[in-house]
Length: 331
Image (cartoon, rainbow, N blue to C red; front, side, top):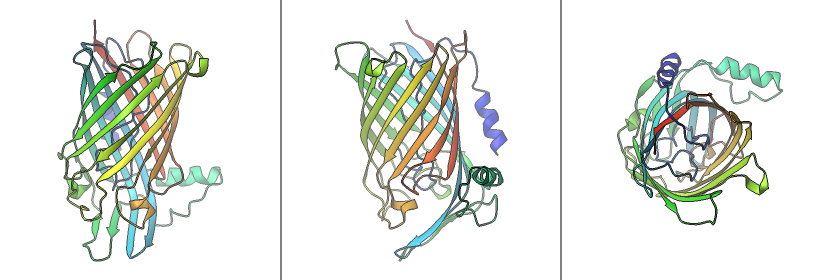
């Protein structure tokens, strides 16, 4: 399964005329019970030029190892998830950017359990949550007075497609500062029973701001955003889901010459469910760190990042992302 999605991602690495200058990790939540909703991937406020198209192919691999019980509820998260997303953004006019995200989602037994356990041992980190059998798939949730949910067989297929639009805001007095409003409409195209979608239609809207050469530092760029996700009723957990989820994030990149950037992103979301379990009803905080390399003369960039959970069990134990991006057209 993992080899198949990596191969699909590699096929996207075709030459492109130009790439967008912004290089932010398109991170989103990897928790299998939370990723079914329409949280937008992390983006900046840069407007794509009229007539320009940019594309991005990302592969996220998340390894889950957690279990808990509280207040008559219980949850088990054990397995691996793979998210292969194809994103296109197009400058339709000077004031409107449109786009689409087409995700493929897979949940499987996985192969990374022994690797992660060895990594933890080398650096003296605990493996207390990794006491069960290695490389199995078991996603379970049970709540008082409701039918329990379980996914124990491999699942792969189309996720929930997202349609996007962005409108720049005429703020700031120089070309270093950019502001925009972004909206995302998530359609119920994925199978909710297999945790490839929610079965509902979600709408997200947020305000985004980006500044180049922040604090007078020539190599430092910053971006931040805040918004709200309005969730449609899911097929699985509508009776306990929240109708609105706040989200926000901040990211920085530091340029080393013309080709290499070091990047870090912090993405936070509010609670999706009314639950006593932190893994199911807690807020999530994800830190992603890594870098981006731009290939000379091809218009292609490649980034790699590792996700670390902060302050909460609502994020995964380990995840990484590989992305290839580029663009074409323009005036």
